[in-house]
Length: 117
Image (cartoon, rainbow, N blue to C red; front, side, top):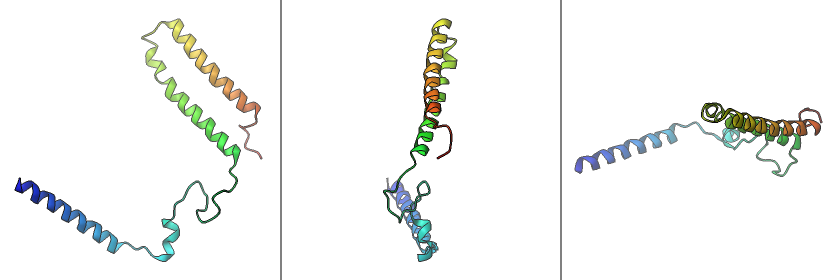
C-alpha cells in the first residue's frame, strides 16, 4: 500500500513539474492574441456574430451530409446480400437508391448544385 502511494505521489509530482515548466517556457505574448482566439469557418471572432450566412453554402453542406450518410447505409447492404432473399434485397436497394435520386433531382431543380450567386 505504501509503495502505491509513493508511486502516485511521484506521478503527481512529475506531472505538476512538467505543467509548470510548460507554462514558464511558453512564448505567449500580447502579439499572439490572434493565434489564441477561436477560429471557426473563416469568421472573424471579434466582429459582429450575427452576420448573414450563405444559404447556398448551407445547402451544399446538407447535400454532402446526405450522401455521406448514404455511403454508411449502403455498406451494410453488401454483406446482407448473402443472407437475404435476392428479390427482397434488390427491392430494398432500388427503393433506397430511388429516394436518394429523387432528392438529388430536387436539389438539381432548385439550382443548388450550381455554385453561382
